Every structure is written in structure tokens, then in C-alpha cells.
Length: 158
Image (cartoon, rainbow, N blue to C red; front, side):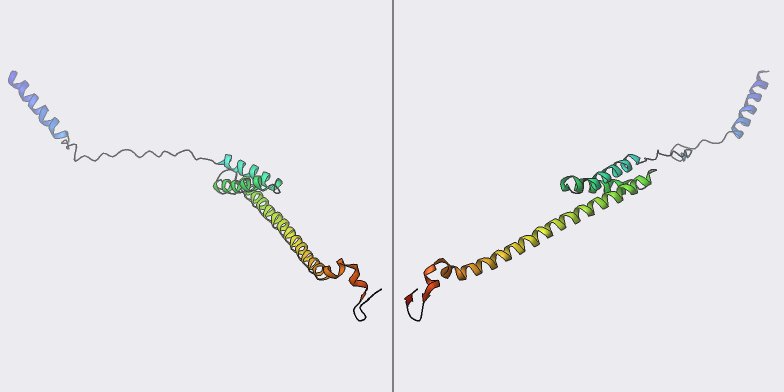
């Protein structure tokens, strides 16, 4: 019986070896990892859109104060452009437009002020030059009353 058992074990081992796939060395194996699609959370930039709108409104309201209006308008434009792809696209567009309008109003105001001051200063200087040229030409004769009454032909005093 011992021989029978050994024969059966050999037959079982042969059958097992036929069904078993040969092992491939680790270097030859291709490690195929299952592809798992992981979506990163979309970074919604709605905070930038809100900041853009608020800064644009500040730039628009305070356009006459250049040191507040310029930084607010520039930041409003930058934040608005960065947040155009967010869920608050309307706020981003509002921030861009109010920032741009505030910036343009500020530029127009200061160009107008400098133009008015420049023209006023230029015309004032021009008037002053004309007045002093006329005054300088008549200064000698107007300063002495004796020459007004002097008769140059007869050399007599009246």
C-alpha cells in the first residue's frame, strides 16, 4: 500500500504541476495597477470674485482719492481676471468693470484738474508778462510828474 500511496501522490503532483502556471520572475512581470480616477477638488475662486467686486466698488466710489483708487482698481482687475472661471463669474465681471470705470474716472479727473491748472497758470503768467512789459515801458515817464508837464520845445515849466 505504500507503493500505491506514493504513486497516487506522484500522479496528484503531476496533475497539480500541469494546472499551475509557471512563475514569471519579478523583473519580467508588468505591474499593472488598476487605474483609479481621482478628481482633485476644483478650487473655486469665488473669494477672489467677491474681493474683486468690493475693490472695484471702492475704486469707483473713491476715484477722487488717487492713493486709494489706483491700488483698489488694479487689484480689482487682477482678482477679477483670476476668478473669471469661478462659480461667481458675474461678480468677477462686475469687479473688472467697476475697477476699470473707477480707474478711468480717476485718470480723467486728474487730467482735467492738471489741464485747468495748467491753462490757468499759463494764462496768468501770460497776462502778468504783458502787464509788466507795458508797465516797464511807461515806468520812467509815469514815475516823474515833472516830465508830464514839461514843454520840450520851449524848455519852460508850466
